Image (tube, rainbow, N blue to C red; front, side):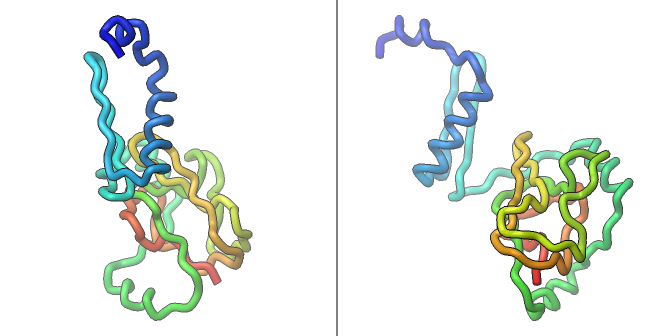
Length: 161
């Protein structure tokens, strides 16, 4: 490709470009891809090295204040290991949300029956909202994370019986 071609093909739609790069990273199991132009730098990290979580948005703080849920303290982590059931875990680092918007009801509550493929929460990472779906059917026995909390990769989010 010569310089003339580069000048004729600037990045027109940043969102489409980011989605295409994320797909390349995922399909090829890359740890990182970086694209730089005069106007923009894009870095997408894959499973090899998860990205740092973004700062908690103000609306998440308001939502967590409006919908308090019981928090799990560190000592209960040992108890969770001995509890029966299947666990829904975070596949990315980000901010956990129980509902699609602060004024909307949560996707699931403790005691709800869910089916495989049902959306159970959203995790925001790098300003993208990622729906988390259940890998199995059952009843929501526990939710370990509060709305607006930061979750880590492979962290237990819910227990399903």
